[in-house]
Image (cartoon, rainbow, N blue to C red; front, side, top):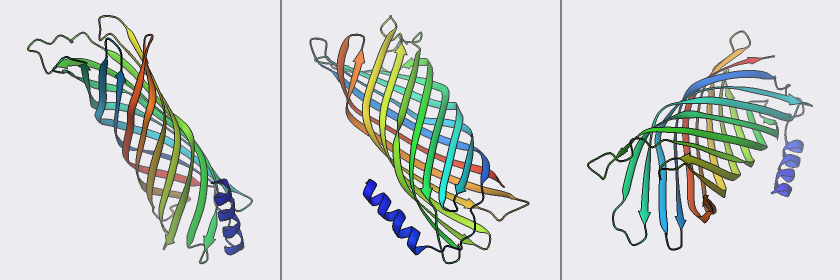
Length: 286
């Protein structure tokens, strides 16, 4: 991967136009709507073998963030970005299966909480056709967190709600490097951009709940792989301001990890996270 990345930079260096104008530095703010989904499945063996599945769906998030980007020595691109989001809606489902016992204990709860993301990237900017078309290989690092507060549990199996006093706090972290490629096309002041990122991530999660009449903590660890796609439409300049629309989608997946509850160890069979967003942005160039 490293050799391929370096070879790509050398090819772009000798094939692009030296006279391309300096990339403007900029500070951007963005806000919008994001929708997440997350699920995991674990299995524990032994005399009290059981399997659990948890998922969060329709997680609606109001997001606010900022971005700083610049280009040094005319070609080397640097970017730092962060965002924070408020979970304003969503639901959680929980399924617990015991070995040798028929039937499920199905629970559903409403979710609130927070999310935040931090990322940095560097790349080599290459321009073609008088600066009208841009290509940029990228290397970066990202860190993402989801924190769920789940309340109002409802029992969908029994006539009586046996779990109305259950509450839980969950925190999930995704951290690791990524490599990607960015393309941009400039036409009559408009900019159309596409970016792909391939992530190698380390997942870690923790759950604190009182489901079994006593506080219990679940820990989960796994390696995960992710794909992220970004689209941007930037409108023509207005007094050094650039306004735009941004859309993104990502999907992470991991398996064969570890899970632990109290002193009992089990297997994290799978973990997945998907997220889609629509944002509006304002960038000040200087």
